Each structure stands twice: as C-alpha cells, then as structure tokens.
Length: 178
Image (cartoon, rainbow, N blue to C red; front, side, top):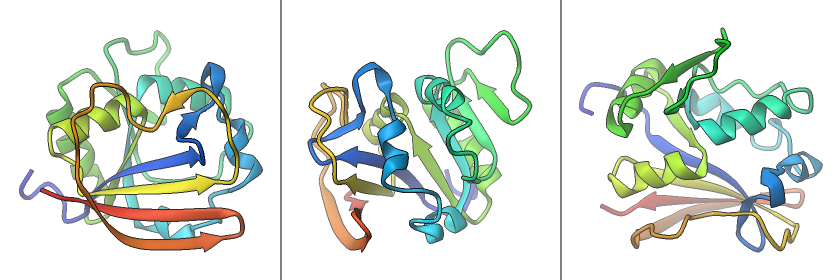
C-alpha cells in the first residue's frame, strides 16, 4: 500500500443503537430520518473515494431519490457480478480485496478511502487494511437486520479517539490497533 495515498482507509458505518447497519430486507431509509450529509460535513470533505460492496450499491441505487447529495469522490464497487448495464458514475472491480483497496486509494489521492458495506468492510478488517472505524449511532432500535459485524469476524481491538454529538446522532471514531 505504500505510496498509494496519504489518506486513511476508514470503515464508515451508520448503526442503530441495537447494532444493525441495515434493517430487515436491507432497508436503510431509517438513516435519513436522523441524518444527512450535512450532519458531519467534515467527513465528506475528508473523503476522496469510496469502496462499496455490491449489496450496498444495490440498496443505494434503490434509495438514490432519497439522498443524492453525498459526494465522497469516485465510487468503486467490488463485486463478482458486475451489472449488465454499466453505471457511468461507478467503476466495478472484480479483483481481490487488496487490489480493490489499492485502486480506490490511488483515486482518493491524499484524502481518505471510505469503505461501505458489511462484507467489504469485514474483508478489509480481516486483512488488516483498515486504519479507522467511524460509526454514527442513531437513536433507533431496529430489532433485526444486518449486524455491524458479520459472524466469523475475528477479534479486532480498537482504540477510541473521538466522540461527537450532532442532534440525536453520536459519531464514534476508533483507530484499529495493529
């Protein structure tokens, strides 16, 4: 990874208080009831590119009319099955996770690479590719859905370094200990 970027690799997650990053059926509309891209504008300003899992990309496409003003730079989607119709705003990658992160980091330049999607984030964490985890905790209990960390993820020690509240949203930041 040396020389690819001076920015960090940051897993960016929105989470319900009971630990879900998506509700039943992968719903994420509850997020926009509590926050927008203006809630913490410094995060968007620090982001140079995004690496997204295919499932998260598909959910985002379904929700695109709801929240279109988040600009985290070039978007890369890691997938085994690129869509039949290309998306001019997205680069689809079919490589391994290390190559995907290196590609997206180069595009991020000196800014951060934001990792979105439970599976892609877990792969990055398991391979030691993540510098920081940023979690927005929202004041809602979902009861079911996609958990913050999938089963089978090994223990990863974190070091808290920041917590900030904006309205009902609490942003927690952690360094990943190496």
